[in-house]
Image (cartoon, rainbow, N blue to C red; front, side):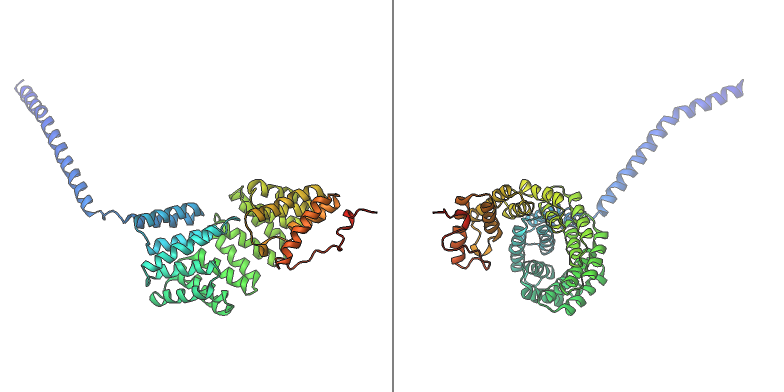
Length: 392
């Protein structure tokens, strides 16, 4: 019994001390966790510059083919740090690429020129600012100035791949194709701007007449970024340059798979199917263009032409009249107006027996021709169109 009482006594004492030891262990563990958290906090890097974070976001968006997202992120970088050179480079790239996505891209190219000029004024010796400005200038057709700035960028940083590929594009822009190919091949070998470098290589190869090589280069770029719509348009162009209408058709359909409302892709499919005399498909795509862009005269021209070729002269006259009216209302310079919007409209009116419309259209054409607006000619006898001359 004594032994039993002693063992019970020892067990009861152990039970009395268990709770305090558990509490103590919890306190110690808590202190250790808190201490480790504090140490980790001290070791964490300071929050990154907001502009740099947005530049990284722009890069990710571009890699995903999201050009709107890339532009928006670059804009936020500018807001955080105005005229940031790397932000200017990402913005210029995204804007120029986006300008090739659809029919109304000229605004993006103008904007790229404006913002890269401001960035270069603020950072005249920064390679990113120089490369950004050079890229925007090349997209605007100013290859000589693009060459000068790209070369300056490379003098400051010989490993600047974007400046290198822009230099190659600029060389090709002034007809120095072999020099251009040499530069873009170096950019491709660098590997850090693979999509841009392969695209630049394709452009230079196409400019120099190496159309199959261009198609191969752009295929490699597409394999790296299938969501980038301009690459598919360029693939279609290179296919057409070698007479491969099937590959061109596939490329345009891939654009529509990415953007079902893409106006330019519908227009290109309209034109391609018209060339192939696939009248039903051509008309279907042509009709979609004015539905998507009712204020774009080129869409009405394509539709009117297709109606005319298909023998539907009333619809042709209506569509072509819309084209000519828009070009006048929108202030298109006479030398830049579309001849067929007057000529084919007049032919359709004559076939429809609509003499008032024919004479109005013809007189408008004569007035524009008198100022040298058109190189084409459209002439009736002095007494006017035979169908509209009243027999005595």
